[in-house]
Length: 244
Image 1 (cartoon, one colour):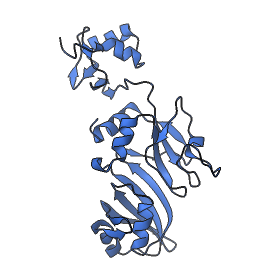
Image 2 (cartoon, rainbow, N blue to C red):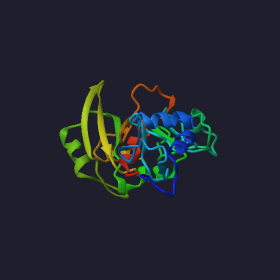
Image 3 (cartoon, one colour):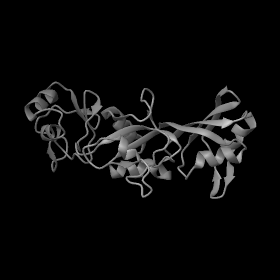
Image 4 (spheres, rainbow, N blue to C red):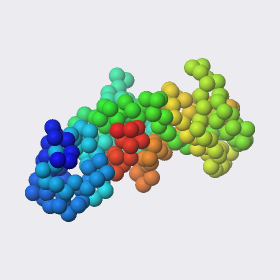
């Protein structure tokens, strides 16, 4: 019998995940639309360990833990990345509606805008924030003055900060307006105010900072202050990125 003999029947897992009723799930299996660990799952007696198996329907990974939520927020300036604030400042949780209590994946400073993920998936949060997994984060910084090529090179080669040398994976000028320059940086670390400190160290204080991308996820089409649920495909891409 293919699958995990000690697990649950696949159609039961699919029904519990909200994909379809058990009978409809069996029809999906017969039609070859359900895959487990890269192979079509057509045998109705198949059992799987839902905590380990990769289950897909029509190429979309199934969230076998329907209690888990994954939300993308385009954070505006002025909101702190905490559940509550003793100073009474607005928090990112004021902008998100969820069925369960969610937690931010990493932090953005109050004056930094852009992409922030929130979830109740502890393992994914751990891996996306742990330096071992080298998750790329893309920022668009507006800085004063003109940024010469030498400054971009220094950002990649490494600049010395008070907590050690920091390096960008890439740094490039993407535009200039009214005496200011727009610089795109990609980093894999997550130190406190790292982008701001790096740019200040090479002589270009930040006037505006937006995180535009984390791994395969970006905020295109999402207005400031708006939030949406990640698609199953997006969740799967994040999981693959960190080996889940």
